[in-house]
Length: 358
Ligand SMILES: [Zn+2]
Image (tube, helix red, strand yellow):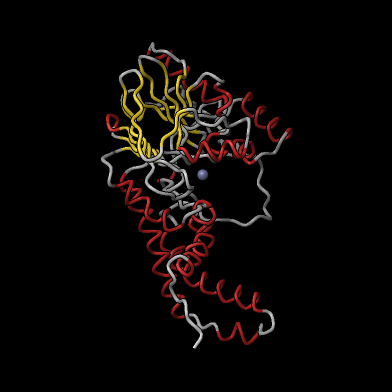
């Protein structure tokens, strides 16, 4: 990774003003995160809950005064981050292939491409835009690249985007069902759909000549998943995805989130975290006695179900939070949410603990 145009000295007046304007005009989550992510964050409300500090291992390179970092992954493959979201691009002799266009990075994608293209004396024309999946938080800046860029994605991504009809996310023109090799300017990108996971259309983007796999919204290097295992549609598919990812040869992992790239060890740590939750959920389901909850709330079965399953969740999550605090960032923030999701999947998808009335 080659830091370029990195400003470690602090936040410029211009970017502070831009942050303030973004907050005042439209307090989107992205704008707020951009405003507070820098070295001079907005003043914190002391009434809000404190969480464990973010371990240094979770952090990536410093952002420049524009609010982004662009660095080399390997040879002519680069990645871009705003500290929360990630995109990547490949410079080729025939133009640039962009992978995802998160709206939080937005116009900084263009700046990052221009910066690298100028430094290397290659074309800055974005000719292709590959979608990892249909979610707006990863491709919502697609329209910035105009009508003439060739958009590439899964057939289901196209179907969903045509259905949702969001002008910010034009449907892909080039689609595939299981596999497609994308060749641009002598470079090779292997796209594959290996079943649903985080989303029904989430694909594996393998760059075998760059030792890199891009798989978005599965493992977030250095961090636990956000709510409900990254708000995933298919929990067994989500849990299985890292094994599929590790079946590819690669050294660099682009997870789509937060401030740094990943390694194979990061995927292993993510797998261990999820496995620990699954194991603890099974133990808690077998040991927490539901009787008191159903006795107490007899005529209100939903109150009984909630308090019982919350007790199972809390028992399963507590040792995982203790084990991973200081290891994976935000273990104390989101583990309980993901534990409830795993609990419901273990019960409903796997049928664990399901009993037939005698
Ligand atoms: Zn997503």
